[in-house]
Length: 165
Ligand code: ADP
Image (cartoon, rainbow, N blue to C red; front, side, top):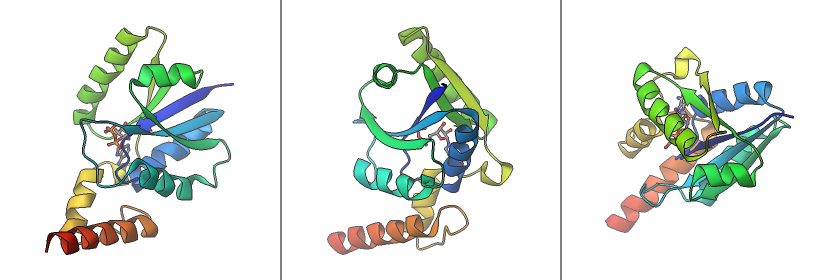
């Protein structure tokens, strides 16, 4: 039984992430999509909200579970009893960053393997930061995220603007 963990910030989940989840669910017997709680990264959505948004879109994949973790990914892998990390690659610039992370994780725990999956080209330019920025400026992101994620983004910025005005 091959089990992998797909870790990320998912702030929020995009069609690009969902594409990687779908591909991962075909490769592995079990795929755990796990939202990282990173104290160095300020996020728009809470861990609970990010998990809810992912959960709503992975119901169709019977072998995909949604979880969260804090602390070191290598420790979380041990807890999940696997040594496989799944990550998505969009562009050449992703490669360098992902390569460093994969080697760091391997240095921290030598049995860890990172498996990279290429995104579909229509999602290759997508990232959560840009999506948050477009919505914060009043733009539409309906081709990049599921409708309920766009709705939550708009609601979040509305609340923020209300609080700050
Ligand atoms: P992190 O902060 O861990 O990089 P992200 O949520 O930004 O978290 O990304 C998680 C993983 O998903 C990374 O491997 C990233 O390369 C991948 N990813 C992000 N956006 C896309 C996309 N549009 N297509 C494919 N993979 C993506």
